[in-house]
Amino acid sequence: MQVEAIPVNSLGRRVAPMRERLLAALESVLDGGHYVLGPAVEAFEAAFAAYCGVAHCVGVASGSDALELALKAVGVAPGDRVAMAANAAMYGAHAALACGAEPVFVDVAADSTLDPAALERALDDRGPVRAVLATHLYGRLAQVDALAAACRGRGIALVEDCAQAHGARAPDGRRAGAFGDAAAFSFYPTKNLGALGDAGAVVSGDAAVAERVRALRQYGWERKYVSALPGGRNSRLDELQARILHEQLPLLDGWNERRRAIAGRYSRGIRHPDIAVPAPAGEGHVVHLYVVHCGRRDALRAHLAEAGIATDVHYPLPDHRQPCLGGRHAALSLPVTERQARTALSLPCFPELSDAEVERVIDACNRF
Image 1 (cartoon, rainbow, N blue to C red):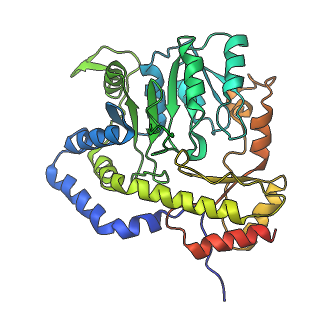
Image 2: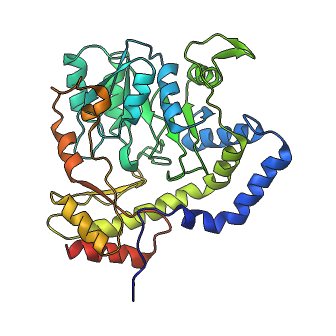
């Protein structure tokens, strides 16, 4: 008997139990007759700001727009430089380049997030930067207090990339998005909190930063048809996506807890000497991705595929080696980033994964 394949993620499984609720939410928007930047957007912005523990949330059209507008709102302008890790598929780098700024790539620590010591060295040795972009990669909070301290001492803005970290919480209770001058979220459908299309948000505790994002998302208007702020664009969250997100927000913590439970079973159960697993996750990690490291990654991936288990690689090519940069960073060496790009492999990890499927993945890894 053929065993059903295990996907890396399944949006169908997520949506199925909520189908009637989501249809009702969509009908409420249709009946309301307001489709862009209306009451549903305002309600979600208020709810998500409260969830993150900040004063302000500004809905935008995508996570990529959120990164770009957050950088612009904290003062990044053409000719500036933005320090960031180089292990997240160019999302942050594209945002900096869209601002006319230049990325300054810094190595990561063993946990795959920006290394505060490496950042300190880069800030001392490689010239001034306007902002630091701290990515909470795979759902794990970066060492954000140390990064914030490095920024404060130099008058540098700190922007959080929270695209994979909705709900991650530090021991003191602060959630992802509450540490920097601004923070960008993606609500792409595969995220821990996902829309039914593209959507994003910028959150901030600073009213002035939030007001700049509100202007930038709509042509830089200071009032209708009067564009006062340079760098504006059309990046508005629509009512449909806002209503869908608001409906799902109360479920987010439960989904994250299930992700942590799956991750814990993996980390305890996978015992193959060639597969390095992350430590069991606490509340500072919402396990958007469960990433192991293996020096024989391609062979492991083929072995799992034969067992009917899908995997993915997040991410295979470091940013400073991306061809779109034209070799500008060819001389830069980031040893940890480069090594992890050769060994990282993402296993299936999503809330609707069954216990039996988790055990199949563990068994297949141990039989490698």
